[in-house]
Length: 174
Picture (tube, rainbow, N blue to C red):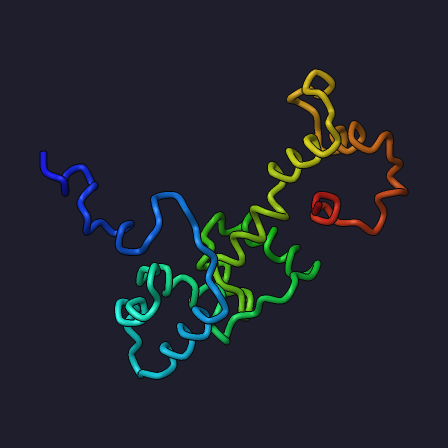
């Protein structure tokens, strides 16, 4: 078996970029500026060329960084309640087709939409966060508990009047 078959040759991608498998390096402001500058300096930007000016960065990393964060057409401000409700509705209607869903939001990348769903709105994940944050023992909660039972277990018995004016999404944003 040759060195190239084991991935241990001196010319492996990881040795070229200067870090081992699994390590992540955040983009610096200088790298972000370089990507934007080079992207707009030509009519047809090539990510392989751009990445040559950023040691340790692959063409895919440069492309993803631009398309998900640096593109001036994108909006990275906070989400509002109307957008959250729209996202929840679209996920129920369309499913997890983030590119298709992102087209309903001006300036939101598919990655931004997906991250919003999984980090803040996904009911299953939000319920787990509630369980974990309250430190309620599994024995106290049955698998058949409804959302209201989970809320009751975490916060104590809550009257419906306490929940007036809140949407389902608001109750589970932590």
